[in-house]
Image (cartoon, rainbow, N blue to C red; front, top):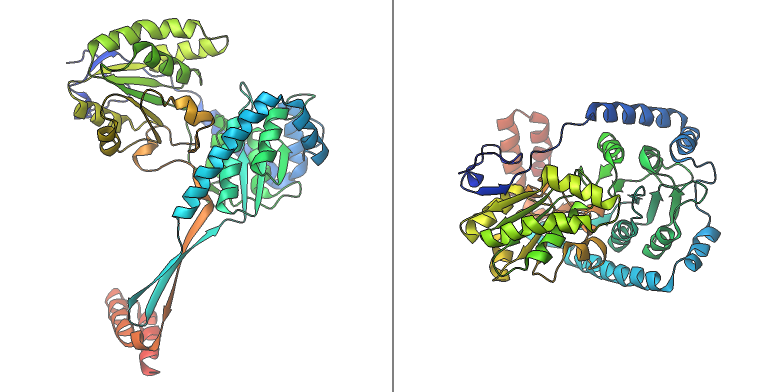
Length: 438
């Protein structure tokens, strides 16, 4: 029995019998109210002043006073500034992501069915008219995020895809991100980050079609802007810090497991990583190795990973593989990596994750960068009820129906009866008149 309780445990009985060899205490609550107020003020200002306000924020927050819309000539020039090795890697990843997204699109079908003689109904898949794709900047150059969002929108059939990313002072969007955005199929690229970038795409500023949906990861201000804009504009999901859970049995290699945990902790101080295992020997060796792996990372990556591991990292010892699976489902991680025997059993049993990585060869980093399935995934246990970004997010599944003469009588009688039982006489009359006209 535990002497301490995980910050994610609550009173869940699934975790009551687990042994925590390392426990995550959680982070101190941040000033979320401040972020909410700041974003609301910025969005209100941009709603009133439009492009002028966006340019003000670009100058003050990104130190960018040059063009907002990236000229075609600059996009073409970026191709020559990216090394051939990197271009080949980006093209390889893009092809994988495109193929997977196209397969998703092909799996989503229009259909029609005759429910009863003369009563025909169906569904159609209609792409949104415009999508706004946010590509993070900041500490890392998120090449893969450009591919994941823009490519998927294109595969869904979205007519106009707008992308934005924070410009570097005096330089603009880095060439490798511009190359990836263009390769993926962005129609318009904006030198904008943060709240101003999200708002510009939502409002259709700088010659863009107003976005019907906003997608892509970002910092707390980007996430809050998407949250506040949601309703009039669709969003992919409410995103929090990335997280990753490894399930490992005694067949796993401790050093590989340790590096997989350390590598995901690199995302940032608030990115939890968890190990669930039924092997105490493995668990104790991983506990010894993770800090060593983290010390090998360059700064500031190593410092971020150390903070995440110390505050949020957990190692959980279970008795059986069924208990391991139940614990993983409780955590509902964004990334779930199984390094254990009988992968078919795990694939069938596990039910709450953003994306599943099966086998020791299948590191989460493959999915983050190049393997094909999308890396924009549900965080903060949202995998209990939703999946990640896919072509489906860019499609409206709409329905249609048509009633021929042979179906009118029975349908009108049932409709009138239900309507009157509900007290909706007007609805009943619209059915009555169809019966009277027969």
